[in-house]
Image (cartoon, rainbow, N blue to C red; front, top):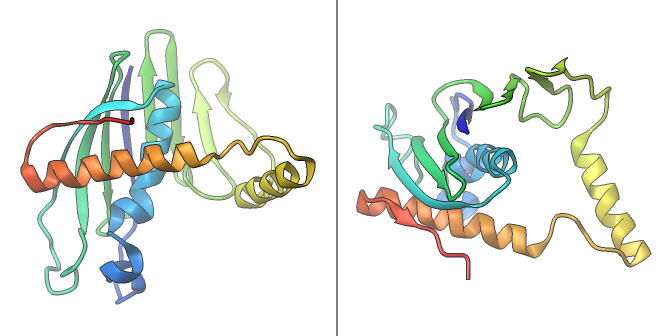
Length: 183
């Protein structure tokens, strides 16, 4: 499976997003994490390695503390490869996963909380109706707490994300491919 995805927007004015102590990081933590999640879901696996690079800053005086944009490649044990771009210097929201038996494509607003624009080679454009993803997610969490059932968005998922994020930043720092270890 080959995956290509991008998620970002043009940041034109000073915001909390460019202050490391408030945001933790730049475009990766704000926008890129959506692409990382989509890649893991499409590959039905966690990546085993990552190679990443920060792209040159077009506004270095503005992006002093965090990255403006980056590219990374996630590799999966099942052979899937994902090329990811995220940044604050272009309005992009796209996702394409191509496999032997078909493709899955998302276009703006593919990473939005509503009005998703998604299609597949088998079914064409998918209609999810009008709903708010964030609301459904929070309702699901509240229901799991109320009913004593399992929350589908677990702490293990958050830990996995941090392993991937740490690997991405390590790859940028060292300029090398980083093997991801989850245990």
